[in-house]
Length: 165
Image 1: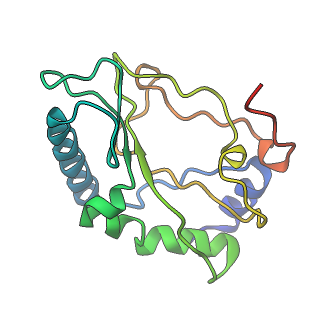
Image 2: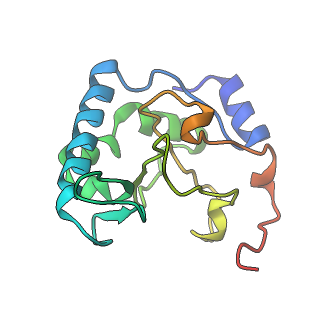
């Protein structure tokens, strides 16, 4: 699925962008389902097993920071974590033996929302096998206003910094 150049970039930089993995129809369905999650959050007043809410969340203005384990709560997200093109990309990096751990949907809403500061995922999800990838599916255009993901090349090679000082 990946070209040798993409594999080389991943190994060199620690991240790659693979455009057009999902069809426009698949993205629109995920956007619709996500909008339904946000609409249902109007009835939620505190963090729960589905939602992490922004401090400014209210029934009138639902503001969701994160949808926890969306793959457990809706079949569209359940299908996403097994999407054949995503799996094929991961298999291009590591071979056939890959395993899914968990998913979350971070909402990066323009105009409000808590910042997610620079961090290394490894510090929060330590494993003994470093063949680990965080797969991000961007469902909206990325712009400075909605807090795009930024990568610092080579940080995947270590060290893992102390995130609790």
